[in-house]
Image (cartoon, rainbow, N blue to C red; front, top):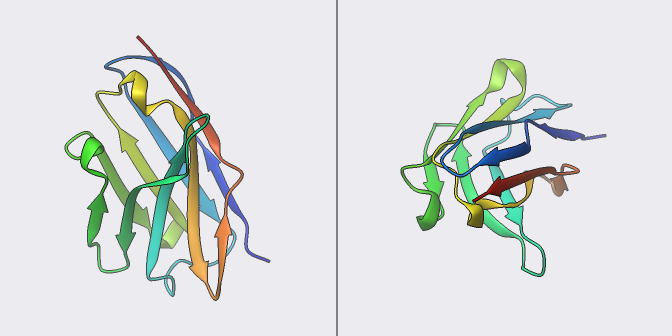
Length: 114
């Protein structure tokens, strides 16, 4: 059974930083792509960033230069470092894994106050 557990969310002022973690219950060595998504109230879930096993990354335009995705396969963990946070970054952030099926974590709330 695959489980993804996100942590690190919280309330922060605009301009602040947070580091999200996604701990997987399975080895990440065989998982090509891991992704972070977010969903704001009344909006669709959207891709924030993803990273391949070879370290290739891709970001949503609005977070480029502010967010950094990374992974530590030895710890079965994916991270999202978020700097210069803006109120529009407020959302529930989810980790996603595709391993045959698609798996999602329960999400972690990020709230950025102005």
